[in-house]
Length: 283
Image (cartoon, rainbow, N blue to C red; front, side):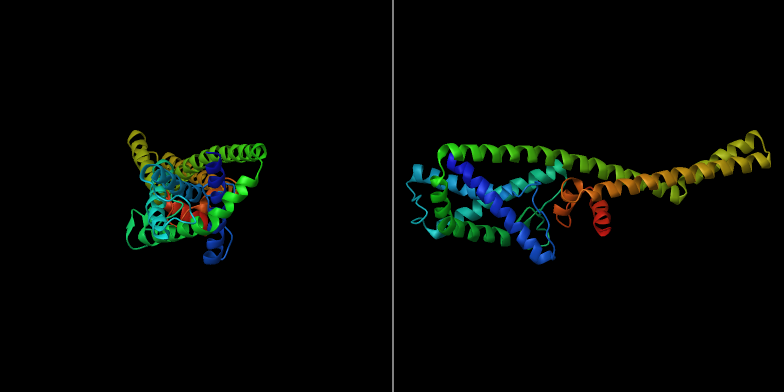
């Protein structure tokens, strides 16, 4: 368990570095693409850790070779494809289900499953894990075992405490972002209703009622002017609030809601994609 805790942290950091480097090359800018604020991508750590655990269990129950220098590369590749893809599928589904957001999206790739996984990247997972376990993992095994146990426990305790705090902050931030996006949607609809004249329709009915009670032309005109003034003020207030909220969300670029928006995929939300596009296009 001590070793596994080390490996999860190590490969989560490496995964974050891969994600940042990949998007720096493909997008031309550095973006923290991880779910968390810190330099960790738990999907990578979980994928490698799952394969290591499966290898150990298979070794105990079926007598498979668990020495990575002797284990079959083909077996590592196949196990990597199956279990790393499973982790990616579960993580993608849960993030989409509970946060209504996607940090990766394969819907534009062939042979994908709801955009959570696809054949192309599953093969990359298999190749990557086979390479990592045959070439890189032996180095980390030696390195971890060189760290004195007491010092190692202190380092891991600090890392996982930061990880837990970051996880809690990120979850709260994403939930807050969804609320703010919902508020922006409501504001947009309210502004649109005013612009489309729905409030004018209500005002016209009110004027007709006044006309029935008192057909004074002067009073009708006064009522119409008051209603228009109220509608204009309401619309102006809504537009100011919308603009302020938009600035507030986009301002938090390194930590907070702005950072989360930048980390999402291009089609990162089923519910608020149009709002996200407007926030991104404002950059």
